[in-house]
Image (cartoon, rainbow, N blue to C red; front, top):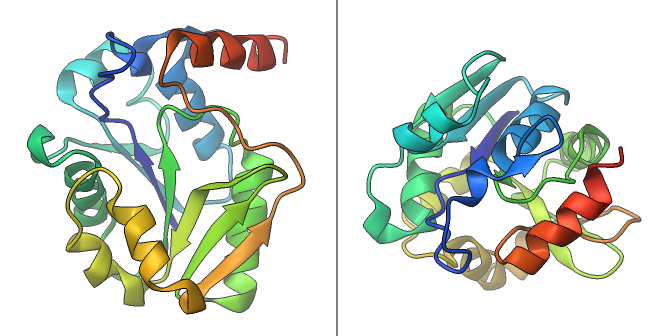
Length: 194
């Protein structure tokens, strides 16, 4: 299974690159990548613009492969396509958000193991309070993922095929994704004491 970390967001709501915000001994994106690399995933693709990659120390040191998004104009879908191109077609993919630290190796491994056991078309993680990432997609789902456009395309695709989606229960609150200064403060308070 290939992990695809989507780390090319434009940070419009925050007003500064959230990927480079300090978190512990690294950055928000660095934290996500480190946790993903510590998981059982076979490979990790990090979709990140070159200027952000240069500003996040250590992204190119681990076992991750960096991929630049093709175009910012198509939002998250452009990042997704770049990640899928780098991942290839033969393996299932797990989508993770580069602005959602707190999806630790235990969550990643539990979601991956559930997918491996049942091998559905796609899996969504169900936390105590909401559904969220990571998502897993089988190789059969990749053509539809590649055809998506816009920022909410993956959710719309999942909504179109509820009968093909497996739910993976993770008994903890959904991690916060960093979209605002408040989110960043919440994430720091939760994770920097670890």
